[in-house]
Image (cartoon, rainbow, N blue to C red; front, side):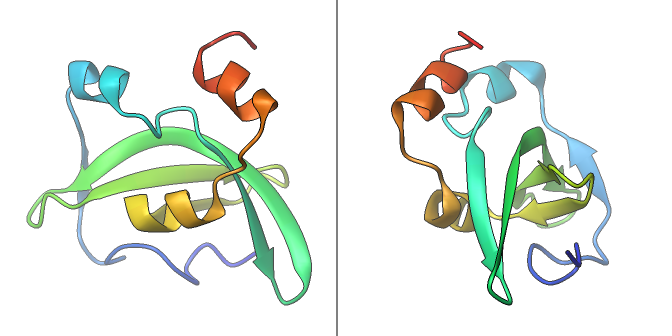
Length: 94
């Protein structure tokens, strides 16, 4: 999986967002499924960051194979795994 296939501006430096903002972000523990060239990849939001200049929020996804990628909120929502497992995960029960 090529981490540069999609995501925010790869040239912009990123910075952490305040922990209090991360705590209330509904996508904080999101799990996603992504299909690339007919192959499925599963990952989860590992960190939430933002562009230093644009302040665009980006979600750092860590895939099962160890690859990392930044996605926008819209991209995460499109790939979100909707299930009881996802609900339990987002509530911190796993």
